[in-house]
Length: 416
Ligand code: UD1
Image 1 (cartoon, rainbow, N blue to C red):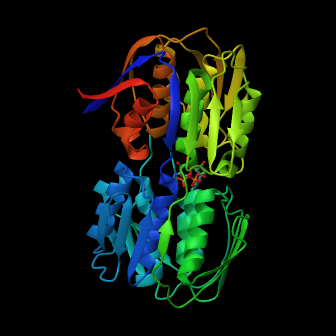
Image 2 (tube, rainbow, N blue to C red):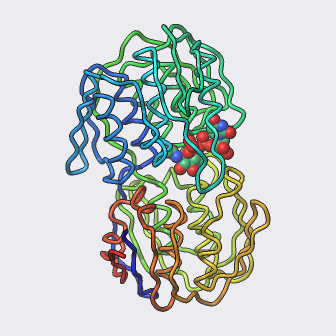
Image 3 (cartoon, protein in one colour):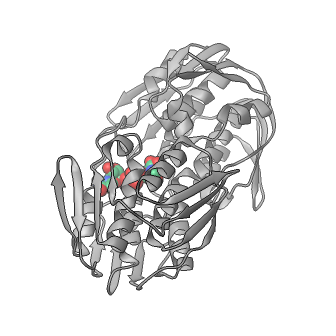
């Protein structure tokens, strides 16, 4: 197992290219299953999750090639309609194959994802949505089996605007008979890109970027070429490291996806220069404590909550950070406290009392974004930190240590 060894406190400077977005590429890879032909994707981040999804698609009979961040998926000869437990348990996003398989082949058998490090993560909205579209959905030996000769358009309302359910139901509804209305749909940039890509394939989705999607079913879709949008979570992670450590320019970024994050950084005292595709952050010596509550897009993303807490550990004064999306997503707190932070937790509310400085220590990754917060903490801390179990970070960050090294950080990967 690999670990990251960090000697913190080194100033950062230079520029870094932001990779394509993990949370955009995974549903778009699933959408390739809707098409009899070859889908070509560019700026595909080389992540553990991308590689897992390729394995899954190939197990279904797709033919994929992946090199130099270019991926082609030929789903002309699908031979299996089953996503096995062994893959789904390592990556919940495997559930995304259900909508496309059901829509194109009338059947899908996908392992029910279990809980995860941040508590229960149900898929009931997905299943109710498939049922509303006319599918028979049953649980059988830990697998969800969904069947429908032909899906039929329906009215579907989500209690909470779920990213996963919006994507999965949209991918099913594009080939249904008639019109589907999704209300309280997610509006994240990756959902917008998925819907635009489906329309490029020949789907008819109206209301893209709003919470009301109207999807007129079509008979078949065509192969397309796709360029993945920049990863706003990777970008936010680098911004929070740059806030106390130096002057960093992020290239290949879409600042419009990060409006609330940039606003919060400015409130914390950071100076930012923003152009259409790049953001420069200048080091701030006196970070102010700024409260933050996560929300669905355009609110502050839950995927940057851990990194924001890492930044607030060295702010002047106390800050209150609330996660309204995932109420148990705080496994990073005891680890950041090992670095000398002063954070307490009451239900889904973290109270961070800023300290003068952090001190290096051995810490352990628990999930993708928690690991990113530990990298930020370790880079800010004086002395050596060893971050173990970094297979979590490799799921969602492309070459993170190389990118930080190029900015001057003392960070290296070692086998434990
Ligand atoms: C996606 C992201 C994840 C991010 C999350 C919220 C991917 C691969 N993952 O996860 O990184 O943190 O969005 O932005 O894109 N819910 C239900 N029932 C359901 C579905 C969701 O109750 O069937 C609840 C969840 O428990 C959660 C909320 O809805 O409280 C939002 O979850 P959702 O947006 O679905 O998250 P994911 O798509 O799993």
